[in-house]
Image (cartoon, rainbow, N blue to C red; front, side, top):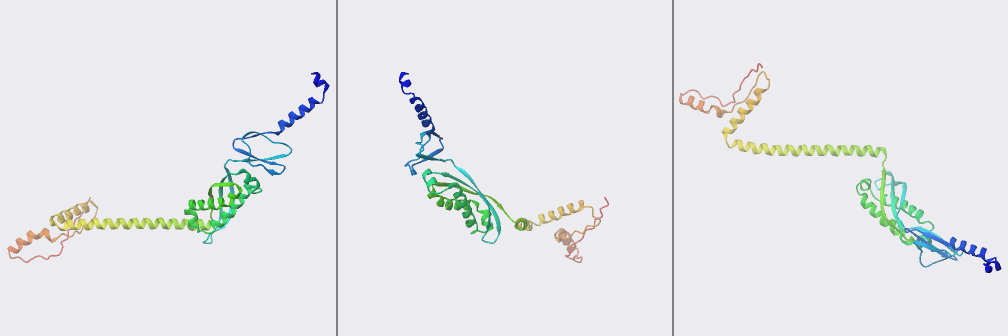
Length: 274
């Protein structure tokens, strides 16, 4: 105490030193890294995470986030290879893998990534047709990711994925695609109907071959058809009968030396008064 009274300036000096030390302490989060410049010269390794000491005012620090960031690429006017004008937007997933290069390699790595994504989106999609753009989005996304990642690699930024978010088609193109889809459905319906007719004709041919091998089956089929027609409320029914039904009668007539009947089909008249 006497020593402090003998040197009264020590207490304010101690307070100033304590405040200075506290101001030099900085907490870096787990997902962050601190890039430190001492007298304008970059230190070898970034600092963090945890509590770090910054020797102010000789040290300046830039804190870089190492998390994956989502960058929305605004809608771009794209003209496809088949001269269709579209508006296409995308989303880019990127993260910093080298904090030192992200600070000294480019002025603003996030803005630079956005700009390179826009130009790459226009150039790549301009080389494909509309059908390829709508049907092969996954392949186009992989190609976009490879091109953008190769451009951002010198900046210490890694692009993990690029997805085409939306494709805005002109109204006339939408109507044309609707007509095309309707025509495609009609074509499939006609093909299915034709295949059904083909299968039905094969089954009928097989049934006709089976019936032709047995005359009695043919007669039974005629009688069954007559029964089905009799159900209908028709005033007159004309039904041809096969000559085989009269073979017995023809044989008896021939034995009695009567004139042989004509082989023309007979007709049956039926009045349904129900």
